[in-house]
Amino acid sequence: MSFRFLLFLFGFGLTVIGFSYIIIYLNLLSLGYNFLDYVKFISRRIECINVIFGLLIISIVIFTKGGKDELYL
Image (tube, rainbow, N blue to C red; front, side, top):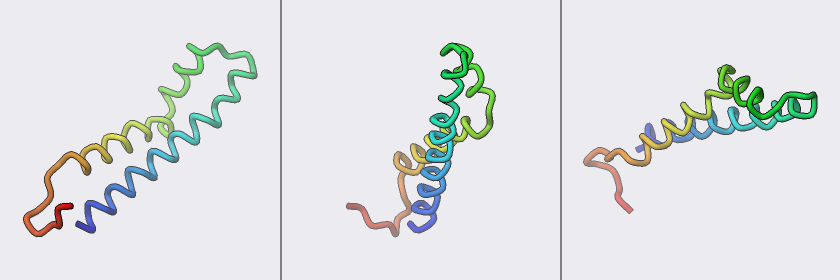
């Protein structure tokens, strides 16, 4: 159970890091980039792709069945 909790926290951390970089890169729109250029830019940055990895890890942890000794609430 603690491994799944730590994996959940790891996925949550990746998601938070990725979303904060996406928000930081919103400043590019004020520099003259249009929205399509912005999406192309963030889709190539590994720190923004952390959002996808983090959400994937969180989904796996939430939707997979636990071991036989875990507490079901």
